[in-house]
Length: 212
Image (cartoon, rainbow, N blue to C red; front, side, top):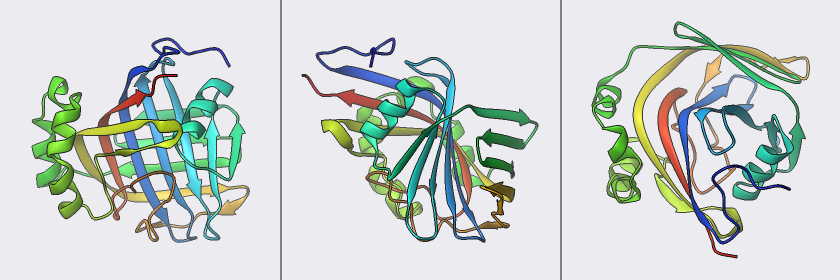
């Protein structure tokens, strides 16, 4: 594939600014939405799903984004199809092929208020993400802010906001997903999971590409 803007054949550091929503549902399907207004690929959104039987799926809007995400994380099935996200107030609507999803974010709690005080320039620094790794794993079991990814890549997550998600509704392949539920068991796309309780996180993700 052709390289997206900002990547280099000899390696480099890429940054993605946006939101990650981690949702559990009563059906047992867990959903992770990545919504990236700023990225080396331009604005895009992608969806990772894990079915109750453990199958991991990626829904991505272009072959370039699908290849990049599937090289970084682990999936059993990858589908390239339009992914649309609409935000109206606190309500998010997501359409991605067989997925039709809506969720509503609630008011920030103490941790969310503290994260809002983190300057964006600080959240972009891997050293800051390394410093927050232990507190994050204690406050949000399963969450890791740094780790090794696929294809020899390294990743850091710098959170800048956190809001609970109270209401979830949707269908996938014609099946009702049910109401919001804990993300249990944790998703297995990469080195860490999203928070156990459904949530929406503002984040800067930094990816280091290894030299070729």
